[in-house]
Amino acid sequence: MASCAAAERGGGGPGEESGGTQPAGTSREARLRWPPPPLPSVSEEPGEAAPLPRQYPSHLSAMARGDVVALYCDALLRGCKAEDAGDAMSKYLLEKLKMKENNWLGIWKANPELFFVNSEDLITPSVAILVEVTWKLPQNSSSQLKASVSVVEPFSSNIANIPRELVDNILEELDHCVPLLEVYPVEGQDNAVFEIAQALEVVRFFYDFIWRDWDADESCETYSALVEERINLWYDIQNGTIPAPVGHRFKKHLEKYKILRLELIQYQSNIEEEPTEEEVVECWKKYYELVMLCGLLKIWEDLRLRAHGPLTPRILRRRKGYRADGKTVTHTVAKTMTAEMVKDFSVDTPLQHHENLNVALESCYSGDTVVVFPGEYKAINLSMLTEDIIIRGTGKPEETMIVSEPTHDSFVVSKAKDIKLMHLTLVQQGTVDGIVVVESGHMTLANCVLRCEGTGVCVLTGASLTVTDSEITGAQGAGVELYPGSTAILEGNKIHHCNSRTSETSHHSLGGINIKVVPVPKLKMKNNHIFSNSGHGVTILQPTDTPTSAGGIVEFTASGDAEEDALSKLIQDLRLEMNTNTLDDIKDISVIHS
Image (tube, rainbow, N blue to C red; front, side, top):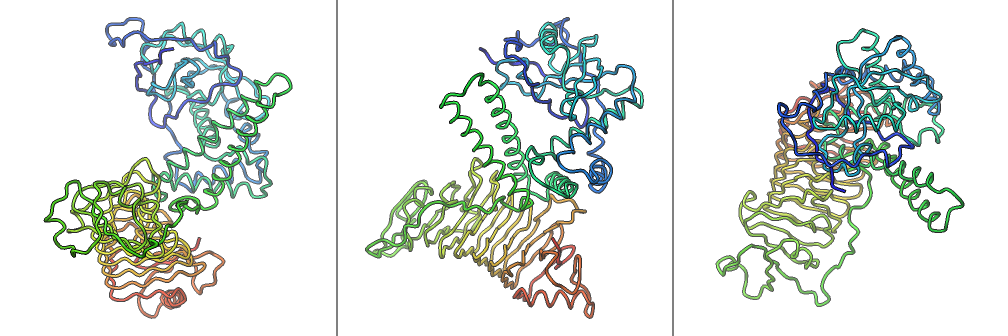
């Protein structure tokens, strides 16, 4: 069947959300196979749908984080167990619905798949229709709330040329009953409808961003605490504390989990008799995939989506080591090679030329050198560095640019014992992990420019990093993040304009350098300039159960203050050496308890 292409019309006001999922039990035959006519202009087609009125704007988006936490944890779910959360939300919504005796107007936002066999080409997330609403009493949780709806005159939709007959047929198939959470009240009605609109948004937010399908299956005595963590997670994604690419990946995995769960339920319901061996195997495959995805999401939540998600190895490639004959090779990389470009090499230097940096890295053994001539390059093999090699540009750093591949999560990842990158500019575009991640071993960055788009440089547990005469800028989190038990030497660097997308009021304003202290990492800093970062110059993230003589945030204060004494002791315990550094940020050095 031809995919549908429809004229989508705006409307619906601020705070508009995507349409709900297709109601269970809807037959595929109910979806009219509609290839729409050529898109008419508004004035030429008298039978087209009228524009939608505005819906009530979002009120949760205007609320402070603390107020949202209080709403769910103190007012709605106080003392509530996970298995009872649905009933609590249903009770809250019913109390608001009972305030309105008469019918009211709303916008029904339905899944496009309900109307069209092929909906991939639609640019709108939902098909929206103006309806008159009569609500029905629920049987169980709020997810089972149904509304009886009928189309309102004049016929109005966000898709200008959607046939009225199509909408009528679909509603007849549904017995004119749709999930209440798919209905958005329109503005201009009485106060009771306004409160219903707010209550619907509160319940939608709970099921879209707070509730997890596995919550009811696990014993959780402090469910409200878990709710608070998830609200904080949502706010951290919204305000940029968690880098946008990382937040996007988390939401994408969560949405995938919901889709897979629905697919499994649908597949099981279609098995009418005793399942065949093939059906049993398929069920187990879907179930196993669902369990694995659930476990991954739990890890992400437990780690609060730290810079690059779960601490799983990114490199699965085996290390080749040195060549059997002990020889080393210099690999040259340039689009076009001339004799002038190799005149500085000694006559006995073994050379291999490559037009592609990716191929050059693939050909390397430990001890080799990759010489990159001016130009712009991409190389996914930078995310799988295992050999002890040197990768260096031949001119100024800005002349040799290596740009990340947006389709990959990682940019530069290393577990080599000793690797060096010199005289290069690394430009991060679209990747989720830190611009450079040192999984294990030691990495040296010398005279390099790191233009981050996601997170900065991450040094994982047991790994070490040396950065000299380099520049790190633009990271959405900290410019350099040291994990417990890591080691770093920073000398003569500029770290600036990092964490710039974080809210000024955010508790986790990491700024230039972020240090996690259990077990203690080691950091030596000399002649660095850390400036124009949102938040602190150096942040020491200390667990709340780690002893310290001062609580909360300890700032670098005037001589003689108790906080300075505590900070000095902590810096000494951390083996943190700081000499002749310039820190120009809001709070130069701080300790944050996690």
